[in-house]
Image 1 (cartoon, rainbow, N blue to C red):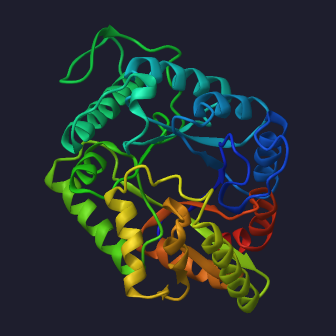
Image 2 (cartoon, rainbow, N blue to C red):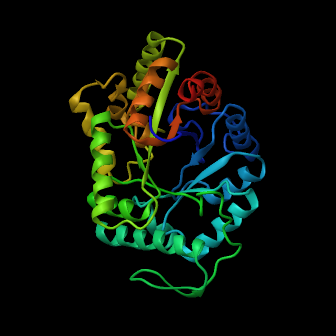
Length: 356
């Protein structure tokens, strides 16, 4: 078994209720409701949660700050976009929140396309986008770990810049970890050199094994200067008391998706990125891959982590997740709907098996 695993959840950061089949209730995105999610995560053994990002959603950093202020151990994994933030502004904001929370901040850098015109961003082709992302990550890390930084990049420049408050070093943690996704060749070069954690969506075990090996080789070939790259899995886990009940519920959920062509599910469909296309292509290989990786949701609009699901009893799903851990995955971001109910169910049934 590889290094100690960490288990995070997902908090829907949405204006419209009912995300991915969630309970459509009044006040679903109020601070009180979102705090109930965060406190339930604390109470049920989760480390924290990913907060999604995108124009047309509440500002992720603001939501994360509010939830951090209302909790004690909850660690927000804050998704942000380099075109939405300037590196020095972001480094300062994150350092401040990290200071105020005693080191509970994690960052997920997102490079996928967004409604750029709405907030005045502009970017060129894929090469330009990832070159900018690489500079953003490199500069933010410098601002967190060095003082009087002068940086002259193609996309960003600072002169004699010192971010305060300074990040407090905790053991091997020098600064908030930088999570990063992306499956294209350009994305993998960024990850191999600049990310702390590479996130994968729910691909079959052999596909993930190959990607881990490729990224390790790429890190060596490109002369990575940081601690070894870690790996994470973002996936839907549909857990029920029995295998039979889980599959019955999974098939019923997909049938409901089919009626509406996945309305309320596909928040990764603005442009189909390489990683998303990899997930959609899995359908051609079978409806169930490995032991219990369900590809049918992708037929009806399930996007991102909603495209493939691990389905089964807690024992079934734990067995599958341990196989990913054996490959080198150490960060798990799980979810199912209704989100609040499943925080408790999976916290009580699944996490003890994964930590046992």
